[in-house]
Length: 478
Ligand code: HEM
Image 1: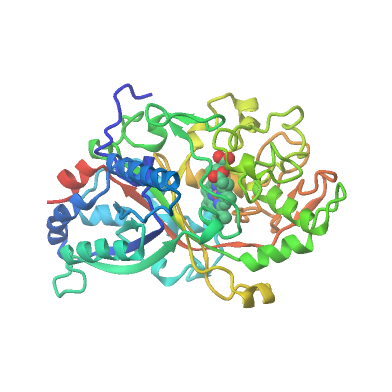
Image 2: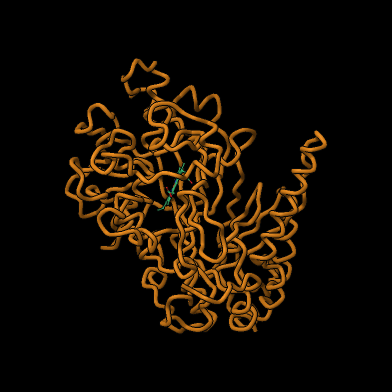
């Protein structure tokens, strides 16, 4: 564990705090031919970068204004905030002449080369696997700028300023746009809920020496998220940076809703509607309100869901939880991606810590239209711009997706094979059993397996390195 305090002015703000946002634009780019021109202009972009200190101050300002507005019985005003972070892929670093070994194979190979192992669908072209991604992500991307704000107007204003500095569109442009993806939080009471309707962003680990841990949250050493803290093998410039895994995930919401409707759990005299709600909660591991099924196994408890002192305070450790799926299926999305006591009991209290990630990201796309709801079919693209931070990709995102979510026997030592994570699990290329299925959806028939359609479709992604602000200024920029 690091004994020196974290340099909060040096670490980009999205990593430990998260950029404040109602809307967030991901601007993917390639660096132009005149790389030195780009590096010179980059020095003028560095002052835009939101540090951890600045992100904390934005949060404090907005929270204070909300508090004052509530006390005076008025609607909280929109406080202007403009967040900006920037990260580079391996090809981007190479172009800039940054060729030291950063010590992460996943980053070096990139996500396109990893897509088959992640379980993404695709086809073989000239002997090579090509994922079913949108074209933009099938070509090298050198970097991504993340711009956030309270309105699209403030995001667009920052983007216009940065694009002008980098001379985008001019004959001497220093970067070229590959794709710009706009994310937006969902409206009204669905704010902070992902498109299937479940409250998201509840469980992220507390970073020792930075966050105050809430009950059940779990702590990680800074070195689990930031490079150059517990490791001595990384180049000096990597310190205070983090790997950013980006995934462009489309969600088939009407199809998900139809499945729940067609497969209500018929137990405990629940109505069909309640049985469908319970099935959804058991697939995720939380009710739509955020209440964990491990604490509220049969009915939603919105107060529990909304209470940060209680909504993470569980570990699948009630008597018999280790070997039954009565409260929560072994394969529920939550249990697969943070198995808590399922691993503590086998491998000790520190066993999950290296695999914790900090999740950011935002929703994209419109609400389900009446026509889509009527047809039970997706016509418009919507989903999650998934982003997570970690210091070792093969222990973080890659591990969660491949070794836990896609891995049928995980968590281990269970009386029934858990099956695949119903939300994000994909079939491993080496898995002879080519169905997406899980056991334990029905607490009264735990041996029964349920076949699951696919509701989350990856259409692109990349691994980036989000450097410290001093590295951006002194090493990457000229
Ligand atoms: C938690 C949905 C993709 C890892 C959650 C939660 C929801 C959710 C509703 C519960 C809220 C919370 O505990 O914060 C989704 C959806 C996804 C998606 C709809 C895709 C569209 C992913 C991916 C990963 C992931 C790609 C990583 C491979 C996690 C983790 C947690 C979580 C680590 C917290 C588990 C815990 O600490 O108990 N997700 N997720 N999710 N998800 Fe996802």
